[in-house]
Image: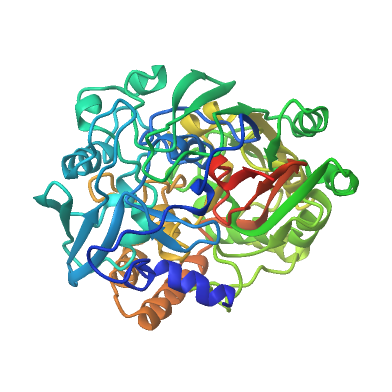
Length: 538
C-alpha cells in the first residue's frame, strides 16, 4: 500500500475496522503469542517524561510511559493503522452517533473488571486535569455525551460529524473509576492510582530518572514478552550511545545523529528507522500588542511594539533560514525541509505550501519595510532534552537570524521547565515539535492554529495565541466533513490559508530512529512511541 493510501485509511474511522462483524473479537497481538521468553528489557529514552498520569500532559515521552500501563479503546499498529484495543468493534449509527463494543473479560492491575463506566469516568477526567499545562480535551472535543447501553456497549454522541473521532481516541488512556475518582496527578505518580489494564503494571517512578514496570500476567492479550521493563531517561545523546554500547540498556530511541555512522558499523547493534510525522517549528509571540518580554532594539531597549504582530517580520525570519542546511548539517540528513506539518504524499498534504528558498536580502528589506531597518535583539527559547538536537538546531537558527540583523541568543532548558513556561506564553520565540497524531492535517490545525478556547477544546497548543476567525471557520468545516475527498480538499485549503500568514515557522520533518542491541527484534513506529510491546527476544 502506498504511504498516502495507508495514512488516508488510518485517518478514516469507518474504513479502519479490524473486525468483520459484531461479536467477532480481534486476534491477540502478535507480540503476545506463545510463552514469554525475556526477563528484563532496559530502554533508554531521550525525551523527558514528566508524569505517570495518562491525562496530565500530551507529549510523546509521557505517552510512551502511559501506553505500557493504560490502554486505549482504539490502538495504532506501528505503521499507523487503527486496530482494536479495549474496544473490539465500532461503527457509525449515524453521522453523529457511534457505537462501541468493549472487550469482555478485561481486568485492571488490581483485579477489578473493566466496564463502560470506566470509559465514562475517563472521558470526564481527561478533559480537565487540575494544573495540566496541556490536557487531553482536544482529543475529546467531538464527544458531547457518552451513553451506556450495557456494561460492554457504549454510544458516543457528537454535536457535528466527527470523522476523526477514532484517531483521536487512540490518545486517551482508560483509567479505573474505582481507583481514579478523587485521585490527583500526585496519586498517579506515586503509584497509588496508577492502575490500568495494560500489559505492564506500575512498579516504581523516580521523576527525572526512570519508570519501573512489571509484567501484568492477567493481561487479556496474553503473557507479555518481558518480566520487567525499565524506562530510563538518558537525555544526553552521547550518554545514550555509551549506555547502549556498554550494555547498560538494550534499546534507545533518538540516537545521536552524530553517532549513526558508528552505530551502523557496530555488529553489536542495529539501527531502525521509519519516516516520522514529527514537525519541528518555531512559534512567535502573537499574544501581546505592546512589549514582548525577550525582544529589544539593537541597543537593548525594549521595543514598545511587538514586532511579531507584523506579518512582514515573520516572513523575514522564515526567509532567513536555510532549511536544507539545517536538515543536512545539523540533523545529518535525518530532517527534511518543510513549510507544513504533513509529509509529501500523506493525506491532506498541501502541494503548494513549500518551504521558501533562503533569501537574506529580501528578509532585510522586509524588516526595513516593517520599520526595523537596524533589526532587533531576540532570545530564542528551546528545550535541550526533548527533540533530537533541539538546542543545536536552535543555535543554528540563531546564527541565521543574526546574519539579517536579528541578533539572537539562545536560552535552553529542561523540557519540564520549558513546557510549563511555554504553556504560559512566557517566550517571545520558542522551538517546538508536533506530531500529527491523527495522520492528517486537521489535528494540528484545530490544536495549534485555532483560536485558543479551553471551553471548546480548541487551540490548546496554540502557544503563540494566533487568532483568525476566518481560519477558525475553515478548520471547523474541514474537520466535520465526512466525505474523505472533500475533507482533504478543505484541509489543504485551510493549510494554505493558515500558512499565508506565517503564524508559525516550520523547519523540518524528522525521521524516527532507534538503536537496538543484538538479540532483540524491534518494530519501529511512525508515531515515535518506544514500546516494550514492540520488542521481542530474537
